[in-house]
Image (tube, rainbow, N blue to C red; front, side, top):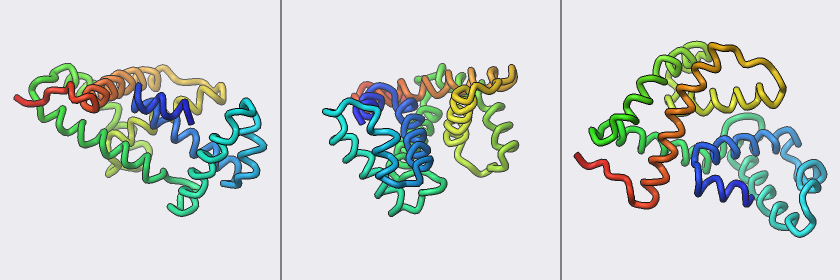
Length: 180
């Protein structure tokens, strides 16, 4: 809970990946709060457990209510992705941020290739980026090999997403100038 809040304030991309991981953690425990308490919350200090029980309990209820117990993402996470997509469009339309455009166009061939490979050609570009980042995270957690081609794609996508996250933070503080 504190981790999520801290990430949301510091790096929105890391926050979204963390929240996707949390959704999967809840799914791994069958969206059963008793299992979440036993397998997840019990690992934390006793004084942190009541707040964690409330946070995880709310997420479990939202996942049930929104029909994402088996797959998909919570509306709160889709909202973050939508905010990022809107900012992405504004950044691309602005001439004030050529480095952002360069990072995007460097990542774009990998995004297109990933969309073709996963069969989600109509999927939003940023969702493809997050799926790539999350997929590599899962591979690394499973101690599976990441190919050189994947590492190259990941580097371009990571740089692009890091730049977007930085601009998001600036935008939230009212410090991002997009006016031409």
